[in-house]
Amino acid sequence: MEPTTPNRRSFIKQTGITLSATAFLGLSPLACQSQEELTIQGAIDIIMAQVPVERNPDTVDTIKSSTGDQKLTGIVTTFLATIEVIQAAIDKNANLIITHEPTYYNHRDEVEWLKDDPVYEYKRKLLEENNIVVWRFHDYWHKVQPDGILQGFINALGWQGFLNTKIENACFIPKRTMKDLASFLKRQLKLDRCFYIGDGDLECSSIGLLPGSWGRDKHIELLRKDIDVLVIGEAAEWETVEYVRDASLAGMKKGLIILGHAMSEEPGMFYLVEWLSRYLPNVPTFHVPAKDPFTPV
Image 1: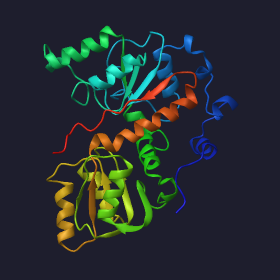
Image 2: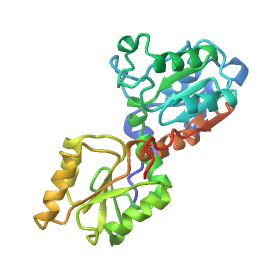
Image 3: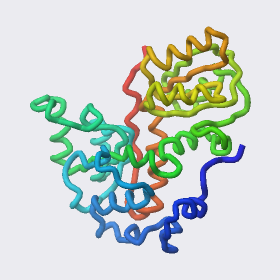
């Protein structure tokens, strides 16, 4: 199957965006500023200028610590701004952390409920004392064409040529068993753990891909299509997991592979380093993985 990823010329034609020759080549005029002239907010503005959708005032993609008016010294990308990731940013003299998920343990990073909490205070002070800006790039990273998280995941698997042109979020790969596919994913993504639900000997070639936490409705919607196995980040165990187990027990050829939320979306934040290099070529940019929070016994 031919990849569905549009090239840059077709994407511009489809969206009706008119760009200068500089922007067409991947560099906005702002991106050509010297590193010394660029503020953190300026860098965020450059990034957001590449996202071809209307702005949502209810987005979670906001600054979570410090202010964006300071000069940018470097960027760290990560799935989640853990204390370990923050310390790595300090060590690398990078004062902007671009995280995909929340910093303060809830989707909207609300902190009123954390007043005087020692864990929250430790993290907040670590960021403030080192003038580190945490900016979340969640909603709009998924809106980039192609979806930044999915593209990074596909890149990590080497499946760029396997995209299914008929089913969104799916690949058509050479046939193998689900157990073998799970083992491949574990090796390729360097996972400590990986789970599958259903018949491990199920032969599969049509694979649905929903890294992260898409929820029951999206999972089952994709499973109802011509999909043998769905690969996801996480799921409530009484929802998609039980749906697939019942489907398998009923003799339907369906399977589910669960990789973990963090480990399934980290490749997308690793890919962000490459993507950023097109628009902020003079800024030192590093990926620091948040790592799997679970330790298998």
